[in-house]
Image 1 (cartoon, rainbow, N blue to C red):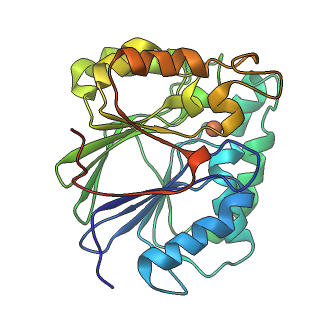
Image 2: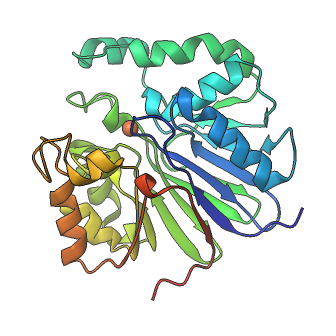
Length: 279
Ligand SMILES: [Fe+2]
């Protein structure tokens, strides 16, 4: 199987928002970021089969950004059903269930509790990644720029997001996951203009995540939006921009910053070969 340096940005297969990337390197390494909901597992597996040319694909490294089920559900589904996929390493940096139970007044520990039952099955490959770590996976470099800070309790799950910068084929992709205001502020204070990246995955599905100043430091040429049609238009049936989401605000920031390239999960899968022409 001939491999290329590619970003595979996968669409949603349920009505829910989700985040799922496959990173493929020219020297044949396969990395997954999150994977989406349980309902997205089959689509992810189909794509892994296609990318690897194998009915039992191998994932070299799987990063889980945080324990919300729109990020962890697919992995939980694949592992709990003994799906034909070989996973050599999983990195995460989840807060404790006690922390989430205490600070998330809506869902408490319910999402991380879905992850706990699979831990015995993945114990040999599960590792704790920490801010400051760097992982070289074939030609791709993964810098862990931020992990959970226990002083950020207001958005307990989202601000526990692992922020990952991927460098491949001379281009940089910043994964913000669902990072919220406090985490974004800290990220900017730590790195400033060093955040500059060619591609950015828009935090928290493109709304209500990090503030505009973070994106200005990133100065992306291309945005990945994990937004369904409803979320993209902030419209659940009553018309454009009539719901409570902030997507249009974020879209306006990107317009004003002159970003020309956008990929949105509502439009289906996107497969980009790197280096990607961003002019
Ligand atoms: Fe999410």
